Amino acid sequence: MLSVPRSWSDLTPAWMTEALAGAFPGAVVAQAYVADVAVGTNDRAHVRLTYRAGSGPARVFVKREGRWVNRVALSVLGAREAEARLVAHGPLPLETPALFAGAADARRLAAVVVMEDVTLRGARPGSATVPLTPAQVASGLGGLAALHARHWDRPLPDTLGFVRPWRLGASWAPVAWAGFVHAGRRLRALDRPELMPADPATIERGFRGWARLAAAGPQTLLHGDPHPGNTYALPDGRLGFYDWQLVRSGSWVHDVGYFLVSGLTVADRRAHERDLLGGYLSALARHGGTAPTFEDAWAAYRRTPVFGLGSWLQTLAGGGFQPVEVCLATLERFAAAYHDLETAVGSPSR
Image (cartoon, rainbow, N blue to C red; front, side, top):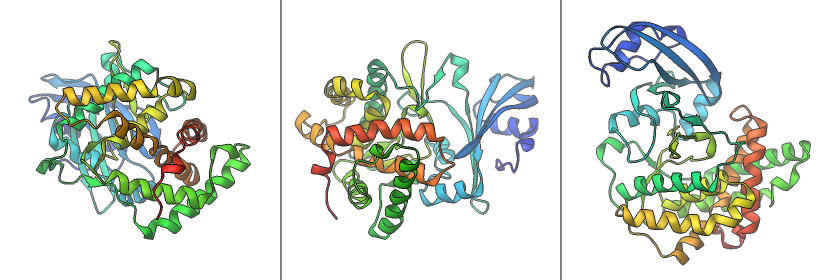
């Protein structure tokens, strides 16, 4: 069984050989060079490889646990081991990096994932500070439609038995409210108070109410966190998704609303959101999902910005999970959509 490394130095040739054995039988790693280490919610690095026997990728991407407070936060969200456990499920029906190996250590709140380095296919990683084009969002929505249709309104297979539905009970209300209050203080200090378009109590009610809505209606498999920083663009124009830590079961509209609003400039979202939503519904039907009517889909979509808004306010309040400039850029899009779509008007109450 693959061990979870305690440091980057533990990614020895022997460890990498074991990690790649399932995907590349006969490959024996001669040397492993860890490079480009980055620190964030998780720590991550590229690992360059040479081989003594067989063949495998020249470079892989490895994610492992970050600092202790991040491990605890991911554990609370049920996200610490999700990506590592997704390895056993096999390929997903959309553009995403191949997952070669994963392992978890519950005692240390630690996990590791070894995956394809998509830049070897010419992929350009996305950034939350660089909006996607409408064409890229259309491509991503097509991929999400294929994913959603595969599991539309049916029980998930045993290999996805670890996937959790959206839940945010009343016991979380004081914690969430305190986070929104702190986020409001930070935004005022940054001279961006307009990025919090309602008072903390109103946002908390909508945020928790959205979790109930996401758990209602036809359920399917969700990426869970499809903002542009978790995407990459291929030379042929296709958009792919990585970072599946928040994989969830829930309503299709969670992924669609979160991705569409976070991915586009405010102007592009206003100009193209109806057409993009219609394109998603058509793709969902083509892949075998039972698409709702456009009117019902639009009503559901209008409720989605409160979740993205709340999530990124909490991210800003927590500090250390994402750079401030990423939080502000993303909050700008969600705050505008919250206003434009009159999300608060349709948000459920307690």
